[in-house]
Image (cartoon, rainbow, N blue to C red; front, side, top):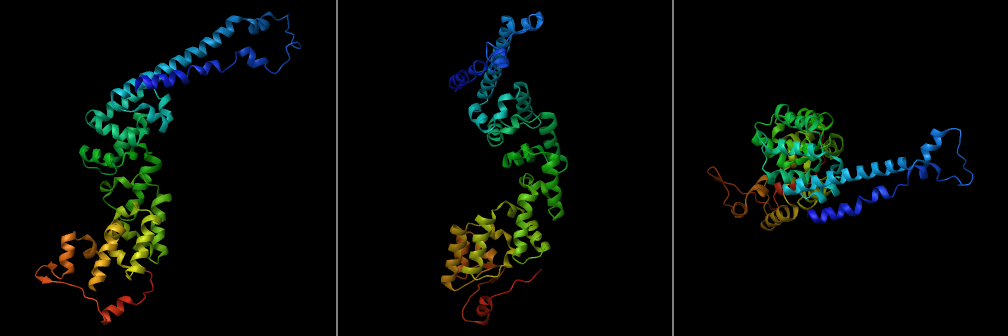
Length: 344
C-alpha cells in the first residue's frame, strides 16, 4: 500500500510548482514585450525584476514547500499504515487529513488507545473508519471536551460504558459540545427522558432536523403534543426510525390491513421496531387465519414458539389461559367500526 501511495503522491505533487510561472512572468504576462521600458534611473527597481537570483529563490522556495508537504504526507501514510488504517481511503472521505500535522494525529491516537480511555487498535480503527474527523479534531479543544461532557453531564457511568457508547455511535466524537450535544441533551430531558446515558446515540441527532419533525408527525395524526412526546419518552429509539420508510408503511398496515385503532401505538410504540415483512405481516395473517386478535405486544414480542402456542390457545399467564377469539360478536363489530381520532 505504501508503494501505491508513494506513486500516487509522486505523480500528483511534483507538478504543483511547475504549473506556476515565475514572478516576472506573473507580473508582466499581459504586457507587450517591446512596450516595456524599465526606469534606468532606479537601479533597485530594475534589478529586482532582472535578477536571476530572485527568480531562483521563488522557484526554490516553492519546490522546498512541496517537498516538505510530500514528506509530511509520506510520514502520515507510514504511521497510519503501521496502525492498520488505510490512509488513501481516509483522505478521499476526509481531505483535511492531508494538512493535519502528524504530531496532532499521534496525540489523538495516544489519547484514545492508552489508559484511561484505552480502546484496542481494532476498535480505534473502526472509530476512525466511521468518524475520520477524529484524527483531525483538536485534542484539547474538541475531543477531550466531548469525553468530559459524556462522563459528567450525560452521566455515562464508567469508562467501559463510555467505550460502549462510542462504539455504538462514533459520530459523537465529531459533534460540538456547545452547538450539538448539549442542546440535544436539554431537549431530551425536557420531553422526560431522564436517563440520557442509556441513549447517547441520540445526542448526535439534530433537534430541528430530526427529533422535532418526528414528534410533529404524530401530532398530525391527531395526538396531542404531550401524548406524542410520551411515546418517545417510553421508547426513545423511535427517534431513529425514518418517517417515510418506517412510520408511514407500518401505520398504513396497522390501520388499513389490520383494521386497528392508531391509538394502540401510544401504549406500544415498540410496534415500529418490528419488521413489517418478517414479523408484523406474517403474525397478523396467522391471527386472521385463526380468527383471533391479540394485543400488539402479545402478537409481536412473543418468540415464534410462544406465538404458535398462543395462537393455539395455550398461552399461559399466571394460572389462566387467555385467547382472544373474533367472530360476528359485538366485540368484532365494535373493533371494525371506524374510530375518529380524539385529541389527547
